[in-house]
Image (tube, rainbow, N blue to C red; front, side):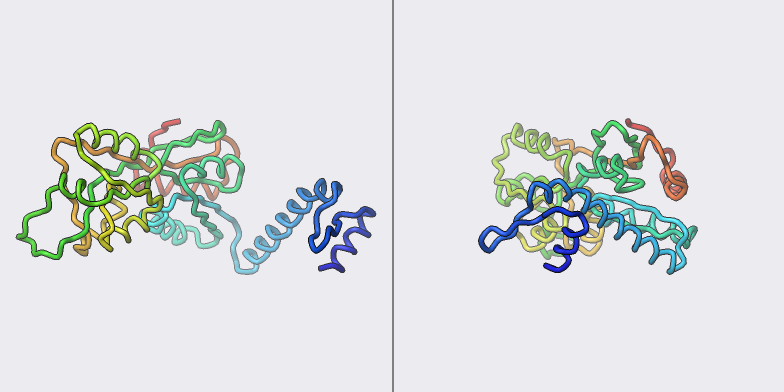
Length: 268
């Protein structure tokens, strides 16, 4: 490493690092050159990835970014359809929180985004794909099909409510529940998978998108309880596209979405 540093400094004709005790720090020149060095490395790695994809027979690329819930539920089917129709496209998928999706599409880090919230960025468009009901999920008690269901208000009052596992509805929902006079003990668990695991372990209950717990409901690990007198919200999935410069591979992905979820309604 020291030899590489000396070689780079010799090539540039200026000192980039200075040793202070046992630590090595950037000089002002090093700090100035750092963003260019990062850009060079990024281009080098991008070139290597492109060359590797070309050697593997890929002719085009498609970069997607998706929220964790969408990546776990609807994205596998979409990718399966896409790769079957376009086997020569090299697909890369990044998982990011919904609040980050718009920025990644706007900056070009992704060709398309799949988000659970409408992005705030100016240089992207958003289209509604589908809506998803929020349901009250509690752990299965182990009783048979004829056993009475737990009382939903008692479940909320006696168990911790695992909150903020979705970026949209939690603040309004908690306010609605407290206005009903329910005494709630909450625990913020910001990831759906962890919230589901906590429910299975008896650590709490939660309000989750139904699409996120379909398997748990089918396998009788969770129970979906009705909440009479409380109208639960719905959430939505959105396609996020750049306003300019759409790639052909991205257009093909959108065509698949159109065929599965007609129509895609613009919301921004």
